[in-house]
Image 1 (cartoon, rainbow, N blue to C red):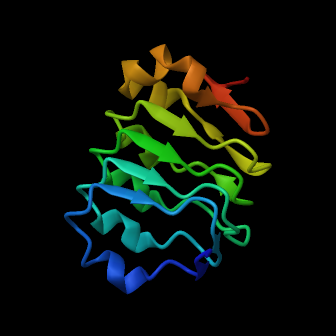
Image 2: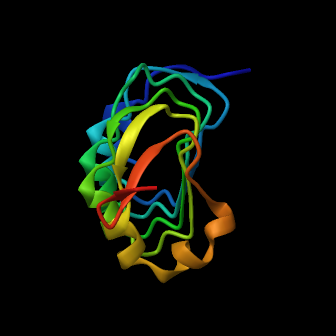
Length: 137
């Protein structure tokens, strides 16, 4: 049974102590709400393979400073990766491929965390236009 609809934005405020949110392979639509920033205990956020209606990644994702893994693969996400993603200094796993409309500069993120640079086998860049040190990679 797949979940449908959108994120329960108001409910996220009540889930402050949640450390692991896995909602992969569902039919979630709409947007990733800005209220995601209230979930400051999150260590794992896996919402890949949904249908987020060409939404963007909210800058509030940068408030999840304990985040160790982030998977937003195959969601039809658009726009630019927010600069606040550089706040995720504990990030070890970041998968965001198959979001053809997603662009951004990963320099700040790479400078913020050594783990993600050394975990390059798990750092997916395919199908994404990105820049590092001002140059397209």
